[in-house]
Image (cartoon, rainbow, N blue to C red):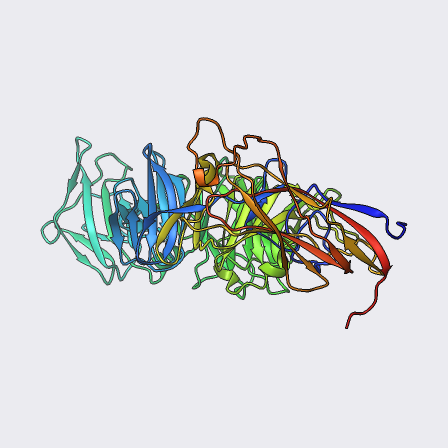
Length: 620
């Protein structure tokens, strides 16, 4: 135990992230009860985050933003209010779509990769030139073959949710003139073709070569059309038979992913509020074909499907939580006895469901999503080998979960970070740094950081560049650190960076302390341009300014700001000494800030020298 009047050194080093969930006096010394706009550098120490810059400006909310490559060419596409633009050319490609949060995905159609967009009311496709409704070019299924004039035949393909059109093939006879379709109350016969002796097809003319009774679904030919080859289809009918609500089931979806047997070869969709517990999937390598038998009912209709997670060779289906039902279901793919792909679903894990559809991500092979109790990760239990859901955001939950409208939060993975943006704030988890569980806590989360002034409504990551859209129509990107001082501003405005130490009593609340005038300092990371203001707060009082200093490094043969010229080209860490004596305090908090545009800022170590004084007492 330290004796009175003995000088004691206290250090804060191996600095990590923020801890909003612990009282300020109980936060670990290497974390901060409040750090703002900082992130870990390569060694884990907190440095100012890069700033962002506006690249494009529209006048309305950005609902979706994508940097996509189609046919070998890169495009930037944005969903702005009820319109979709090719951003680089400022080309309006389609208007009148839903003004709501959207999602996009790549899918291979058997020949090429195209980009697809779900707006909550439309299912769209971008081919590099234009945006069209998928239903306009939907695959027309061949629902039956080898039909006799009276009907029957062999079922072949299922009806497509996306189109009212369908096809049927008949084997004609020498005498039959009347042919019965597989449906009545049809809308129209679109086309009838007849096989010729030379294997070509002849298109017949309505009301000349045939007539149609739409109510009965019956075609009457003027002349017979016998089979060219015995037992082979020779009459090919395309007609339309709308099914109410079919197309809307797909076009109303709001979440999607790629999954399949032997690869990501099918599109899975869900999130339609008209059928919240159902999800649908496309035919293999065919995003234009959603067979009407390809759907599953996932749990209760009281909770909606919120999103999908990749779990090895399984697909996780995450629902809303209601405290009672299973929140995570597992889908597996296999072949049936006929060699067809089948997808089976089993209940997985009861627990906390998702609260936002836009925060599903995969980082370092760990699936993450946002729930009403924090960011949840799905991991394998090392003892039982069963998947379990664990909290990964314990350090920031107290503040994150107090945000309004968490269902509107948007998330992404950028480099090694999982970022959630809501209400202009960002909550950042560093997947490289795990928090050691405390006694009684079986979950280990990620080190966390907090940013403000990032008004993101949606994110897009293009290689190492993080883009975002805003509610007022801006499209912005985070700048690269190689820009040096130009990196450290938000569209020209300062980034306010703050690091606070815990409220520290040094384990001796029973004694007053006296901070020494000499021996107290902060070690800062060097930047070409930097400064730091030091404050302190004692015993809950207002913060008091202690010291401010500019810490520029002037590189040789570079552009020099002569108003800040220091002749300092030492690239080693820099120190600021406090030179302030503080007498008779019980608890102290040190605060370090930088709020200057164009300046970097980073803290590596804090050193404090103090003496223990007499027994403390209540102050009046």
